Length: 343
Length: 291
Image (cartoon, each protein chain N blue to C red):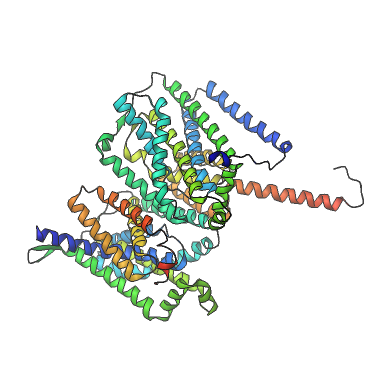
């Protein structure tokens, strides 16, 4: 069924594409070079966090951005992934690097279980239910015996220098971010992506024209959950100690939505812009004001963007480009009659 | 044992009454305006701190605060409507939702800046006293809060049933286009509606503050409760919301009596999932017509 969704669509001509591809490759190479030679612990670790959030935001983007189903509980999958890895380490001494895919699978199964009842309901109800589920899962983790409740789980530190650890996770999360971005790009240009967009624009109409809306939403949710779970597993190894309150913090869910909305939900570039921007501004503000003031400022920004700049920064960008293109065609049309312009 | 059980039931009913007004504002705004007021619980938190400030600074009794809160939050709601909601109504649903979440986070953090994350309680003269009926102990403060909640529910019910404005609001909830075509000023009524919803939130905040400890960053849990009440009771129907509130209150007290405290939330989620699966379309027209 899935293969049908991934039929490539040929929409734009290849000629215009080349420069932007080059730009992305240069950026990735630049980041790789910095990761290899950079020596500042703080910067490496900040970049690692940025990449981590890029992955999470992209994972959110699949259902939330393209499908229009806002998941305000992305941290559920992330946290479950982290706990799956940590528990596998605790009882079987398996390294999270090996069990990260398993963590992803656990999160994906949970995503399916949550998705079956909740993805039949629409819009705001879905958002609220996903938020409530986070609290429920957090409490479950606090209370079941094998997670050690509020005590949390310690993982084994890696046999590396602090710089080596940061560098390792820098590259791990960078790799994940690139992979997931490529995946989201592929989704955007596939029938699966179009199906999701159709659901976002008008779910009833989509169903009438033959989109299997419920199944598409399930797949999108499971995919997002899997990615978040994998990252969660790696995150557990990175911070080496997890406990329910921090791992299932509602702030992480909010951050993800914030980054997607600011960058531009429903575009593959959105999270790439949103995640660094939000973290950069947050880090700058952290030096000058307290984190509450910081979040208050961000919430005002989010309200303003949601109300006045639909589509976030990417929305602005595409509108600007369209306007420029219109202006160019208009100018060409004025110039065209009479003269033999070669353009 | 029987006395114990009776006390639990009475407790459940009293708390349920407060949950009913918690959900009522959300349900009315959703049913009539079609907007999920995610910031509802943030206004509940403001209501709690409204009572707290009045009590700490001026020594105003929470019962008085409750009646002061209603007009105060009504006006606050109208203001928020004018500034924010009129714009939210114009954008796509997903963006409106994001904006409402933004409002919730904004209020929560402003609350944290103003009052820190410390957990507060209001200790009025009657907070720790209880009535003894036969051999059943009843906390006086819960009786008072429950009575206030019931009064507010009755007021809203009467307002919607008997006044012209209330009827117009119901008409708006039943059929927006038809209501507009008979000359109802949608903008004005929506403002009043949202004001009422926020007034309910404020009143609920005061009532909750009388019983439970509160802090700015735990407000989200009330959103979960309010949402559960709305899903159970359907949209915009005062009587059904009241019943749903009572059910949630009873479930909560029974759970706390027989299970570890934390499991209340789990039961809540299972209940929520069950209701959603059983009545998938329960939030659509069928329930809406009952307004």
